[in-house]
Image 1 (tube, helix red, strand yellow):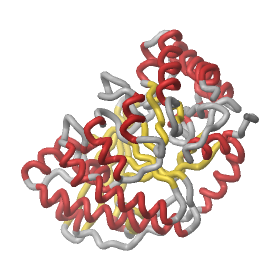
Image 2: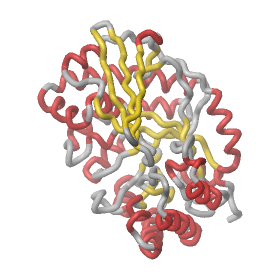
Image 3: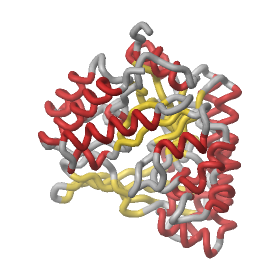
Image 4: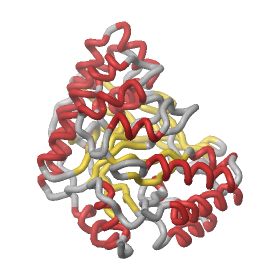
Length: 375
């Protein structure tokens, strides 16, 4: 087979067809980390090495103004205060609702490029009622950046939309532990929140799809309803109907749906298959996951593209030979039988400066993907 471009390779693989080789992804390096990754030479060195060797599924979200919870709000409703304490930066956001103010507190630590939620919007039942009282004006974002990104990527990859599902938003405003307690004690409020968010997410997605932003979309949230936290029965209540509605909407417009779910997914894989997704990640191997890649393929069949299976922790703690063994095994199992497979880490490092060993392991991951991925 002739050598394909990254775009051709990804589209063939996502369609379940045989490509020239297994696509290699650098996951969050492609889009999520934009804004800081370019400022650190050790990361830039990886990106330069990866050019022409990896296949970009580049994260995309439209720019939005005056939007909260996928709905428009007046600027006067939102107050934001920022300050620094030592090596940490804090952001407090307050939103005025008809029933009172809800607020969240975020923290970013120097050298770790992520945001921690210190206080969630909904701290009690009263806060939930305040949130539910927000007037709903559908968010209408400017989507020009999708077409700019698509053109900019060219043959190097494809844009990938990224959206939370209703459970993701619900767990986010409550905090995961409080969500679990509320679900056990008073789950009618949880379903009110789920329905509140579902309407907003669905209309947002429908709008951007109707604006021709059609392609692969990653849906985040199903992992919150997997064992050991919740049973497969709860997964069928909290994920299946809500996410299936989004997936059908994507398919109606010619798009593809990729479910993102860390952790132990074995007992919910049949439900995931019934949702008629197109792809799934990150498929962590045991012990973090609870199922090997070859068994995932047996359950999901040939129509669903498998993405992932390389633990990020391996880059930090493993030797080069450990990385090579994991990549070789993932490719062997992921390509057994029919169906697409994309080699991808379960996450990527986000600390600076980046340890030299981690940098070298990521580069070796790329080399091994090229070495063993020829089909």
